[in-house]
Length: 362
Image (cartoon, rainbow, N blue to C red; front, top):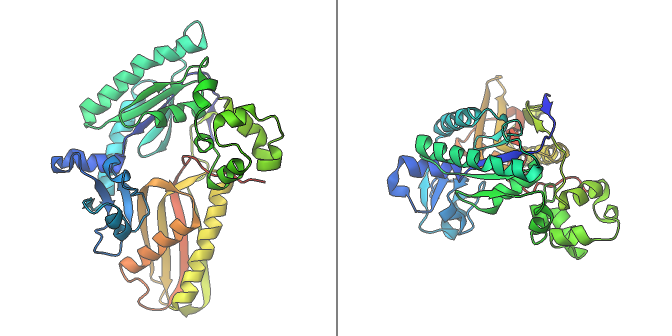
């Protein structure tokens, strides 16, 4: 894997509610409405993405469409057009690359930019300020050429740039200066810190550490709470992060499969197989500190006919339950278990760093 060392001026570009925004752009009747990209609620399906208007009702990726309908009765359901989203992503990344920055594409709709060589001044904060006009121009180009909005965060490292881009959505532009980074972080919940997922958050909150400021002030040994993550967590709470931009993908996908001793269509056996595979994938994702956008099932019949089906969501998946549910839906959508199976496999791809991701505790 190639990489470039952190060098001081990092921007994080995130296209706002990407899938849903493309649908609203291409169909003006959807503008301002709660758009839910996915299967209709009258069918057995799941949510692929949701607009900001729909998210206000609690709608999220990988949720059953029927649940989304209950939460958002007036939601406008639109079938996903993955080819259109991939093409749009390509166009946006071309605009980003034209800035001359070093780019780490994180997913179809977001990327880190190292603009240190472009924005050089007498001190760190002056260099960060030089990136603001570039960010404004980039936002303006994406809006003018692609008719979409993007939010950009600027800071001295990846941790802060991502937090900055999450701070003012949609269509925001936030800079976190070196001088102000510690006070900026203080009021944020601990979940805002890279590596703090649901389980770690619960451990920290139970210990009285609910905000990043609590972590900054904590006089004790965090190893008793989060094990080997303690040193990095303390550094992150102070806005320090030396992770480089990665200019290649070390791993493209994670998968597993099982060949049965005897061909079977027993639903209990198949469900147990998928659950075990999903649990294994979750462990491997968390070990590599990644989330997945795409879930794929693979099946082989007794005559060795092999089929694969996949589904992509906008928000990265990290939990076995979500991966398992999508796998079951993929099998059921086309009634693929119509005869005994010789092999059943489950995999994930389109891997990236999820927001608030959960690192191994100990």
